[in-house]
Image (cartoon, rainbow, N blue to C red; front, side, top):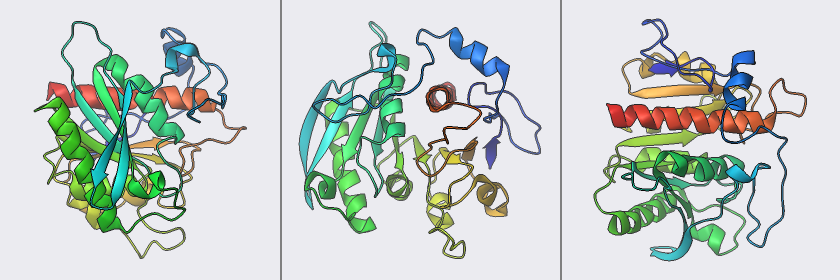
Length: 289
């Protein structure tokens, strides 16, 4: 496993016995100076109501609505795709990042919305896929096999719209599991796993590590240090990952929702910006390789 063990704000070389490159989340003055120089400001997050009930970051530069939305047919009913189109005028698109949600929330999840508003600024189109069970208003997520079939239907629609572009498949929690199981079949160049549920809370013996080990493409895991579904040490201490193409970002003080407590050393808004920066840098390195 090539571990990302430094701050989300700055990817730097790390010792070869740990991995080839990486970053980790720590409270450092350098992070603050780094983000003060960005075109957005770091402010306290707000949950601003809107007609679409979507989460919006406090600073206008990070606020974004979908470029367009579309309903798609899946084997288990209609799903929804929200498109956040790359906004680099005159520059070729880097590719498409297709993300699906977990079992607790839909595509309004904070981390998904953070990436949907930030990655297009780096040339990546983001497509958020809402599974049919959520579109239908049901409270309980579908069986994993049905989630995979829904994700594959979404990927086929994205391919038909965008052609032969670099496709990164990802998601959060249950959506991350579905992406890991489907990435190779869908011809994805990489897999992004936000808050991967390595096991049910309190049941480490029921590991889902096999789903990660079978991915077969470069994979980035973003995991909160307080995640009851599996903390970062449970990945880094597992020798089975040593030869895999998996990289890991630890979000200090964050839970399964990648949310930090109010008393955390780093605010939620700063954590969100660092998350966006780390994923952007990972995607940039994919393109360069």
